[in-house]
Image 1 (cartoon, one colour):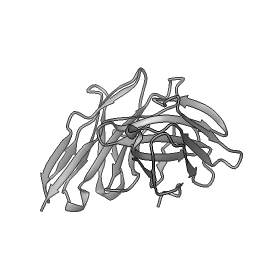
Image 2: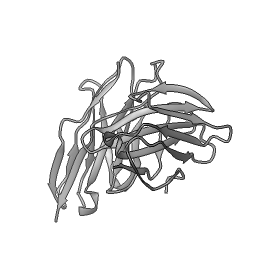
Image 3: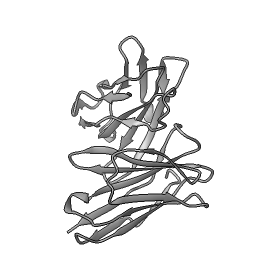
Length: 112
Length: 115
């Protein structure tokens, strides 16, 4: 158990819908990262927050957004969902920027 | 720009034999290097990292990795493979001198250990 929690574990929704994925980092970690893992794309970095502020952006679609709250938990919002958004979404946290990341168990999203 | 490559999609090894999972990287300065393992339906688990110091890094579950600056490699090794080592392995790199703070992950290598 890494200490990073993600909810929900599984999510099934329809195209065009919007969902919110939640992540609670390890106690004391200030940095949160979001990744998407699909079968044919490997692990894709989406976005990183540090102490409430966005620090780095990867291959994140405009339909996706995220934020980190004052209590350091983070939410990833996915809107206008498409079939291709079906994937595992991982959150990771680290004490500060660039240190070892500890991953949560992931949220499996299925868009029908 | 920093990058990392795992040239093998799959590695097959017999139980008890030594294993190597390859990783090469490209950064402008001295890299921070990481190995993670992902078991089915689980998140990634940290195995080991190299930041500075001894080129041979020891990690969890009997794994070790050797940093080779001249070959820009950071191969993961284990002297004697176990069936339970079968999983997906990711190498990752961060350029500590880059203004970007992200860690770049390789495409992953699926390790299969046969009994």
